[in-house]
Image 1 (cartoon, rainbow, N blue to C red):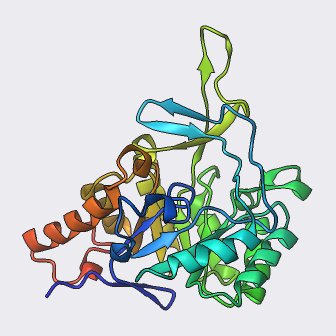
Image 2: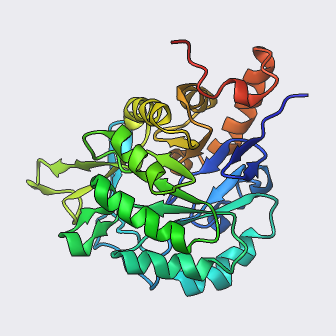
Image 3: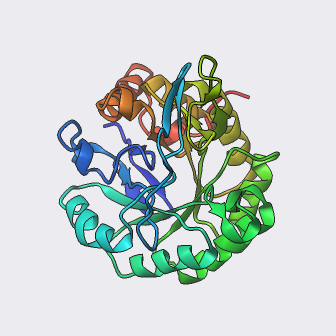
Length: 302
């Protein structure tokens, strides 16, 4: 019997496939296409202490092998999330990981404390949010601020804490170590790469925000490299994401050192991607006689 179960910070997932925050709503939007019971975990869209309207439109643009988004973490806020989304997700046999965002440390702590008494399995902290007090430099772009916010969240959190790292840094291993040193239970990476697109005919920016986050297959080689570096720098589990569209992509991340993977932008292209990845991983394990998925984690031959 093949074992596809993985354990992240004490939370057992039936398989290593989850959704990447911001690409799957809170599960409701995809439940007609995807049997949520079959997912290892649903990672929700970012939730803030109060509703956020997000950025002005246009805020999505297609690019070669990917997409740019400058949604600005639009969300209905923690009150609506607790009343509507958690009860919906709890109907399914899957783990629930809530992505948390904020503009100050206090914002994050308000959400983390509010979630402490709810039935969710893990928190994923989006440190790619602009820190208003630091002149909008993301919390995850300086090792000291990452250490600071992680340690403060860990003091308040009742669930395991996973820090979602930004790739827009010089040294991803340094950031991974800072999160681990501050007490993070796991890390996830990569978030989007900062990009830009200009309409040459209008001679204007395609996105109202000028820049946006690049996701999709185009970023996968960067993501695999960063997951490899981060997983070799720390002893906590790493969740890998960035351009996963097939089971081969997912297995590449596992071999690089990820304990689990998340499917993001490809949910927009093909809403069945997560289901296809789960089936494909099982078929791959059968083909190569892999009895336990843990044999694949970090299994690239050096």
